[in-house]
Picture 1 (tube, one colour):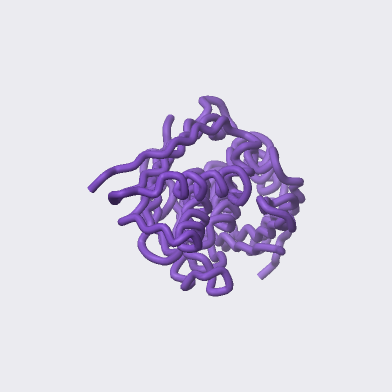
Picture 2: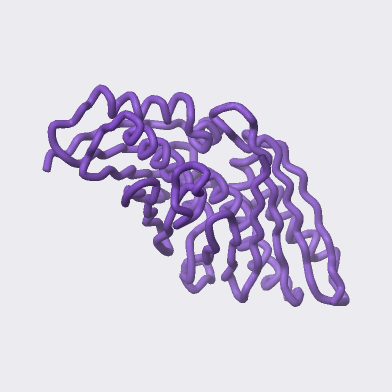
Length: 139
Length: 139
């Protein structure tokens, strides 16, 4: 399968990316000569990582008939100092909110994504050290 | 430097990613149980790649006082067949639109991004074979 994206320059540092599912603004912050009109390209990689794992978790929990109030994935990516700046260490914390958690099944959903299905995570593994953890928040 | 992103589950396969510069919807297509309410996570990586190179080009052309009518970066990412599905081959075509192109300087701007500054491209190099080309469209 082939994914296609077109990124078009607008003015100054403002770009628009057309991709499957929508169009998104990209811009640099004011500290880099931009006007903060859109997303930062590197952090889009982290959103893609969280999104990929998040879609897996949503699908697996549904398939396993496991309910939680909600879940979040918090990501932190450490950028190297020298150009080209890349993420060398990435932390992912899967946070599940609810009560009476079916922890075995939830952990299995996370493991299936991390170990087998999440393609973005597999790509990140090629350049970054990943630290992955799971937290349960009773509410 | 540390970049932080939070991806939150909404309902079904719909997620929201909060990241520097904005908030973005993520969703699967209907063929994968989603409702097409947002971007696909893997293709966000391609948008990040085009965005990263695009910001470099915009900045370098400005610094070199080179003007073009506009430019686009077209990206195609080939996904592997087996899970986890990753991009194994990526094509990037830098298209410059205008006339009386200062091709040496434009090529230099592309080379600086590709060879030295674009961190997303450096991350892609770790898992994909990249094919990069430049086209000039007189208008």
